[in-house]
Image (cartoon, rainbow, N blue to C red):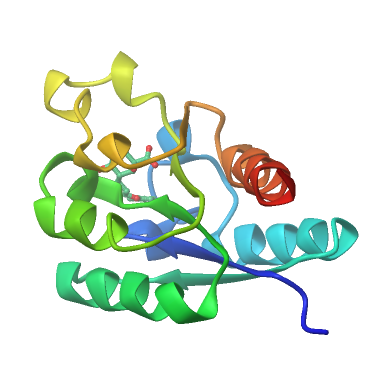
Amino acid sequence: MPLPMIHILNGPNLNLLGRRQPEIYGHETLDDVARDCAALAREMGVEAALFQSNHEGEIVDMIHTARDAARAIIINPGAYSHTSVAILDALNTFDGPVMEVHISNIHKRETFRHHSYVSARADGVIAGCGTLGYQLALRRVVALLAT
Ligand code: CA2
């Protein structure tokens, strides 16, 4: 039996994680996040695969792919959190648990970051826990899948 698959989707500029602005986003790279989450997923008896795109339509396509390929989505939509009805609409077509992650505490930053369209669909939101937030979200979706 294949392990339940969880997709971890990341939006624009997150490919630069660990390489710029470490005072906001820390020192871990997105490859580190992918490796840590894959290891934790295995421990919990699931599988996690991480994807990133700088393009809104590609993120919509990733969500459509997840409809058939994943049991849960963890998403950090980056700046599209604050602008994209298209990503919200796509997430609304997904049946499983959705967790929204922000590495920084968006509520402690500029007011334009305080609102996220994606939060209207997310089953939970983690912000300001650094890259550890991805692992916390992974634990939460595994718990939700077990209920
Ligand atoms: O805190 C987060 O995770 C954000 O989703 C990150 C977005 C930002 O627009 C959101 O308001 C909050 C920005 C991602 C930029 O990622 C970088 C990573 C390293 C260096 C430069 C940018």
